[in-house]
Length: 326
Ligand code: SAM
Ligand code: SF4
Image 1 (spheres, rainbow, N blue to C red):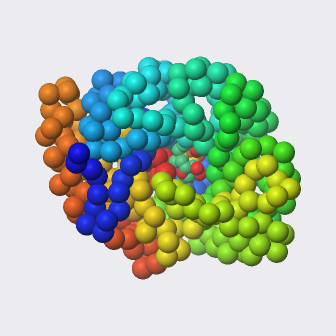
Image 2 (image 1 turned 30 degrees about the horizontal axis):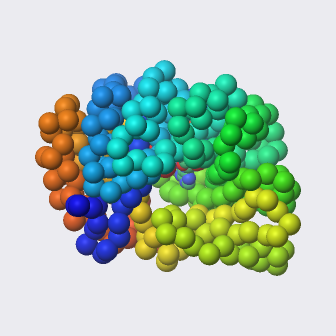
């Protein structure tokens, strides 16, 4: 079987597929001015999505995450989930969401076969959540997460982008929250994009301080298992949940890369911080194009670079993660 492997021996079993670049939040670090219509063509249809995912699955991809923008804004979300879940070879389907509609969608998503859920919660303080995201929806998001457990999700991952002076003192509050809940909270270091340059200068904080505090508070690094991504996770015997760190400037970040990204317009991005992307959409019209699509994927993967160039201040052509899926 052909598999997606790059020139550095990294294998790509995980696809992050953005299904819309639209969003109803305006997170300071992602869409500071809110979403503006771009005039771009409509995102991939369920049919195009099926053809895309089938090709990836035939090349060894077994995990697919639907992301955005905000994927729950797609009216045909459940149809897309169904197409992905039923693709031969796909064993795990996950969704990243801002949690805005999770309360009502948790049940249908679970019933449709979604088993992994990532929700952004940048602060557990309602006023700060509002300040960061532009919406006063913390209670709804937290209720959505509880609803996810009620309908059968066993574990939820929560992402919080670390922002100096805003949420970087909330470790204890987040730890208390996961004491009795099977939630992994991952503090993500703010990453630079074209739309957050000023914020990056003011608010970028390294996760080292969080790591140091976790270690002094009795948290221990969790053994990595195969297929784990770049998050470094910590467990504690008195806590059901875990705390994690995602630090793009760390040496391990690119070594553990196991994911490829496709934008809502059907373009492959080899790296979050790539200088560009290559369209696949012309090969997504029908299943008969699958061999050609697979050949293009393999050819493109051979050009993937060993690492990003963030330490040199280069973040590729990334305008905002809402267009790529984060
Ligand atoms: N709207 C969904 C959400 O917020 O979870 C899914 C899409 S969002 C682009 C995916 C992830 O990217 C979120 O966890 C978000 O916090 C993260 N993200 C967006 N911009 C970022 C940045 N500049 N640095 C670090 N993480 C970022
Ligand atoms: Fe929307 Fe997610 Fe970006 Fe926030 S991080 S603006 S919720 S896409």
